[in-house]
Length: 424
Image (cartoon, rainbow, N blue to C red; front, side):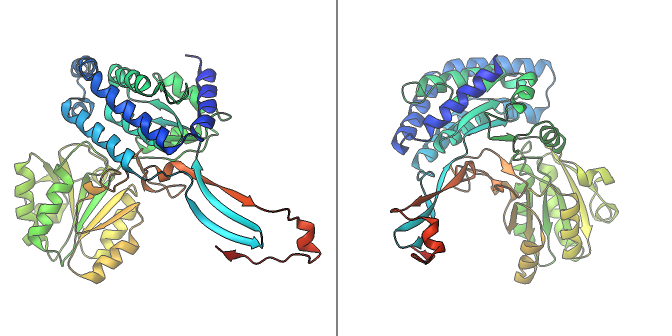
């Protein structure tokens, strides 16, 4: 693959995408949806080949589940495209309107970022979600999925290209297939505006260290649920079990459960029973093991994203200790408190330094679709330029448009005209 060519093609496509009407972009999304349905059997057949190879290579079961693309996954993808189509157009939104002086008005207007390169894990449905989000927000997309999903991704990309060919410019999306492609992409700082890597902290750090292109890191999800002394035990068990077991190999699943010492004896036995019934291996600190049978937790457990049916449990003396543990060991992704005490809720909300901080609900809600964003490119754990689930708004920047009627700076200096700075 000629890396420079696809990067330049994407750059040229981005200029054309930026001026497409919302009706044209939505029509392309509908065309993609129709093409995916038309070619479903081909896509499923290619996914079966990917699955067979992954099984031969002994890919872990949670990762196999993420790799599978069947009727249920297709239905989710199509629903996500419908949600994107229904969203208001993110482009052209005016977020500031100000009169600088009579007849000279300043506007801050949302616009696409341009060309976005996304490297993501072995989830074929993510390919469609990310391409759709980039299209809705007027960006060209360079997409690299996991090698385990290569055949499926090729089939999906072929269908998407067919569905949008009469509306979108060539180069609006391209599929990268090798590590060399990724390394070459990192060198195209004249053509690519943003890189979004999804993966481990080490992977995101590697990307940051090997490119001059701005990087929006979507790193691992080491999420916590803290059960406060004031928690309702029945509700806490229900929410904690969902946060761990509703899906395992996902970045918003809870990996560590922190329990206040005053509620541990009442909460841990029923919670452990419910978790073990779902096949979860429990690893606890010494105080936890005095209450429920489980494996010993090591220091490494507090820093591990399992993506599997494993949960570490620690008893803490106070909410302050829980917050300190989360800020030290967490990945700043999503963390939750289960508590009836409103003061404890407020303390947790303000004290935990994460992209998502929840009260009395499952960490599994950290998702762009569940937030009403249509889908997400990923969940950003940094603080610039977007944070949390990144939907279409996170893929936009802005430009300042100044509309005048012949004003000059000299006139403001000599006093002919004066600044009013009046919001419109």
